Amino acid sequence: MVGTNSPSDEIEMQSIGGGDGGPTVNPPANRWSFFETKLNKISNFLSSINERVNKSTFGRVFRLQGSGHPDEIKDANFSTEIRAGLTTFATMAYIIAVNSSILADTGFDCLCEKPIDTQGNCANNEHWNICYNEVKLDLITATAAISGLGSILFGLMTNLPVALAPGMGLNAYFTYQVVGIKGTGSISYKLALLAVFIEGWIFVILAITGMRHWLVKIIPTSIKIASGVGIGLFLTLIGMSYSSGIGIITGAVSTPLAIGGCPAEDLSPTGECMRGVMTNPKMWIGVVCGGLFTTFLMAFRVKSAIVIGIVLVSILSWPRNTSMTYFPTTLEGNQRWEYFKQVVAFHPIKHTLAQQQWDLSGDSAGRFAIALFTFLYVDIIDCTATLYSMARFCGRVPKGQTDFPRSTIAYCTDAVCISIGSLFGTSPVTAFIESGAGVAEGGRTGLTAIVTGICFLISLFFAPIFASIPPWATGSTLILVGCLMIRQVTRVNWAYIGDAIPSFVTLTFIPFSYSVAYGLIAGLFTYTTLNSAIWLVIKLSGGSIMPKEYEQKEYWTWKPAGEKPWILRLFSKGRRWDDPREIKENPGFPLPSSADSTSSLHPRSPIPSTAEEKLSERASSPRHFHETGSR
Image 1: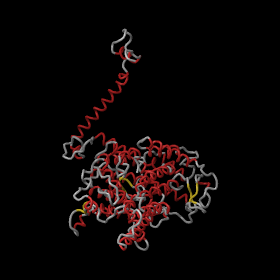
Image 2 (image 1 turned 180 degrees about the horizontal axis):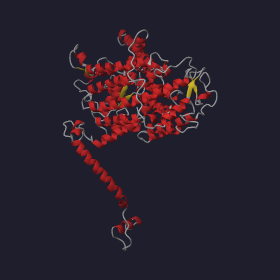
Image 3 (image 1 turned 90 degrees about the vertical axis):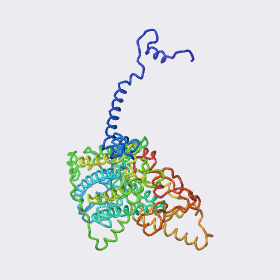
Image 4 (image 1 turned 90 degrees about the horizontal axis):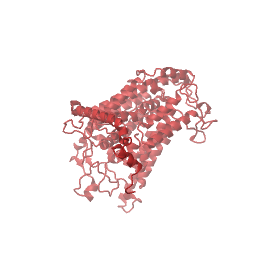
């Protein structure tokens, strides 16, 4: 009330000398003075370091703020870049365990004697498992090495805060379709490595000639989106399986799939649970700790939520003589335990280094071509869109332009890293959208990627830890990554059947056929056949016969607006292709910048977006990266 002092007012008056001369009470703010002093000292110390480094030659190389470079990057400070690099590594670290687990399922060149039982066990299962564990150690080293080298090289060459590593989705296709579990696929691991190696050099040529941008633009947008959704469903299916996941589903006789969750020893000869459905402790810690708890952390935007989930499940699986141990009292379990106890050790690559097979005789050539085509297709979409969205997210796409600085160098660097990764024995390397977590922390330059790469190289010496992460720890991760990948399904153009059906065919064929290649081929075939037939009817009828909602179809042309690839300029006039929709409806209206393009893909839209702008629209949202930090 007015004119009346509250108890808190009296205390405040006494603390400044008021009242009746009683004991002085310090204001609440003084209680934190010690911490404020310490924080101010730390802040001043970091500011002084930032100022010194930013103004040095080192800062000028990376164009840090205050470096004096004509193109210095606003808000790019040394300490911020370090923190952003550590954040990116924390969100990407799971790839070391997940990628090695997926690729090791092929067995590389481990001899799997026939017959293979219904549970997928070789006749010489014990000896095969020993070889499998050695291959997995090779792939842990290979994954960490190429992620480290690729990220450092990319940061130095492009000055972009984007890290590289073997891509999720492509590693699943590489393992479960191309090579097959325990080598039961269409081609050998060594021939698949050759496809990856050649893919990298093809990408170099496409980047230099400008064809890489063009190829992305001419692929129907809904097919691009649907392929990512399909790969997400594929990863989800793998994460639910016994061989590489939590074991919550299994094959069946009367139905394609059946509920699982029983201990592996309770599976019947046909692969179904005879008893103990949903009672496997390993499955439950994967679901609760690796799935629900990780999702809970992601809901609060906790950085490294996926890594925390994997670590928690792994720690619970390490004690011996428990129902969920990863080190059972078997020959294989004892071998794992002895290696795990070393904690710090470097494992040289013994099996997978430079193992490309150059013999393409017989049926190998056709199967090799299909694998190469799929790697090219998915990697063009994945890496190009990710790089563009990351450049937009960190503000490196100049206003009024549809490209980012050093884009050709970026694509060439990524391509070379793909081939280097093949020499190490890994599936295709790509730009990771987890880099957005580092960008959200303030990363703006290549220094962020370099710090991430150094962290990966340090992890090379902790191979025993990464080798002891069980599949039920990474299974839920695959499911969560799949969830993050399918969220873009709402961006498929469901309004027009000519776009919706091919997209649906693509996203369903990928998981249900257990093949990324067949899904992509089926989707493109459906799109081409259906829309060609519709176009023919419209032409022959003079436009009098037209499908319902045809006006809502996605605009498509083989001459997308923007600069032509330079190799095509040799055979045509002009440097650019103009968008016919703009010429017709807005003559003289300039092309929109990547920062303010908000148009739809409908033919009537006066300001169209390019293909990669639409691909990266969701990924370039800062809120998206704060929410997920995952690819």
